[in-house]
Image (cartoon, rainbow, N blue to C red; front, side, top):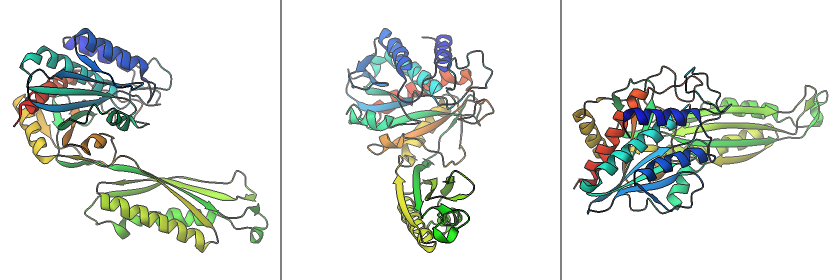
Length: 374
């Protein structure tokens, strides 16, 4: 597959997006292209997504390359000639680019399989956006022997030809909290006969805005955001309960634990001060993505050697389940400049196809070098 055919493949994926857990066509197209080139698809039991392999014929290390393949429930407004043909679904985060880039890398590695010292495990992961895709892949056992993992992600602020490689934390742990404040409902004209949960919910919402400053080192980034507040369904009835929900983003495990404890205490305290009770639920997301410093150095050196511009991307509190793989081995999460002007998850997001073939070449070279590394 040459550059133009790979771009055509990418455009086809973009035109036919599938949300988390429904990536059946995407999976079939990728498998078909790999199998036609003789790339081994490993038995996994996954409903969507799969794990493939190149190498294993000569001694060496096991290197993992991972992409995600799912789309978002977003209506596309890009105006591209190959825009989504599925209403309300769009590749607004560039996972079509990721999948095509890894496909290209796999085919390049297959062409050089005879010289490959070691094994490259290729993970085409489902359900990164809304699901447990990384955990499902880990559960297959097919990545247990991987010694290093690498992934690319589209990055609109950089043009094609630029890679963002940064050591240390690059994506945050995304946790969610759900707090149900319970009072006693009654007529709005007789508030003394009930216990309104609304003032407690309002007080809690305000209290949570100062949470990070109370428990987190000011030099450690952390975010607590209330995103959903609801109570009742009409103007003249005091409701039985109110719901306060939001997200917590942290880069350090100790901040994550401290904020969970503080938010639970704030919920209980605010509710009690208004005569209510609070039911607290915490939903763990994946851990923060932390890039290995030494491996970043090797990736930067290769990128510069191949003619890329290497830059430091902006810090972000967005999240990624690539951290699930990094819990078992070191790795690097790399931003690949794709231009476009609109951020990920925006209806007008686009990824410059000119960045695709260089990304495939970089992944392939990186895997070859890391397989042979001492």
